[in-house]
Length: 458
Ligand code: ADP
Ligand code: MG
Image (cartoon, rainbow, N blue to C red; front, side, top):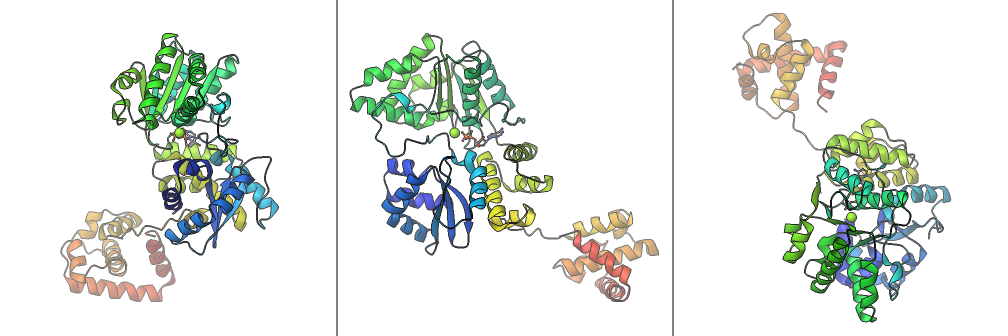
């Protein structure tokens, strides 16, 4: 819903306004008809509610939330007021746990809507939370991480350029910031620029517009380390590619380190000039794969630790199992969960997960095979015994129990059930079901046994 809401907004306003005002907003929580958005500061709220009032209403209607209203919390630490009657404590909690999600490194604060004329401060600040220490390793990302660490340890002497690619939310930006921070911590005088290719382009456009193209070139050709994020964005932007090509060459020739990230390998970036393709392949290309379950759990636990959130193993496992692949989504779920737990004053448990993460318990149909397995396990038999002709009591009773459960828990007919038990006649099945049903009603320990078996399928 949130994504389609943003999509509706994006359709209605120009690209630049969209990325300035709406991209930094993250969905904090939904409660009743109120949608809580986390925005960097007060001016975002004012701008969104005043200038884009109608657009927001239309977009809400378009996604079927016409009755909903927006409320805001602020991510900037010096501005924790909220615009509505949230309890102070709630706000602060929600705020605390959001900062890492809301401070998207792609969207620096302070650029809010300002026309950028100056060339100076456009490179983005490094997010102190994106370090190698906070980066959880798994088989999905160990190669890219090792490459990044090598580059951070000995810039230009290992891989140049280092090209990191992977799907959204898999840690490209995190690794780039980690490289930057690691280099900077060792040598504060390194001139290091981290910038997204989109910002690079905007800066270039402004430089051209304000006759500062020369200053732009000098700036980029005088740095020691260039970390350029989301290079795929310059696909189709000829002038930017041209400029970047020259920047690349100048830095490379001067033996400066270049790190590039993209959502796909160089060859697959559409309309990227051939000469850039081949430049990107000069060094090392490392990919980030979607995380496996264990890595996802480890990431959740680590984030919870960092944010001092009490997250039990089974809840972590539950979330990890439900969120398919994207680590940003994984974090987003945790943030939403924590926000809702604090709004509603509830513990973070599986119940809350299901509600907040909008997860329906998948209906896993119970099959005859499952029942046979569970029942034979319970009695210490083999499934084959249930299907055999052996009518000794220690086998006949479990078989009758299994038949009874098949009748109760599946939609199979009596003859079908009979066929699964070594071609027993349907009257045998019927007889079994009646017998077990009588025992079930009369004997309390049998009652309990059957209930336990049934609940083991749920
Ligand atoms: P990308 O740039 O590839 O879209 P990001 O680097 O922005 O993805 O990562 C999305 C979020 O997931 C960030 O908050 C980041 O800290 C987190 N993240 C990604 N990979 C890891 C990891 N291996 N360990 C811990 N956090 C991670
Ligand atoms: Mg990124």
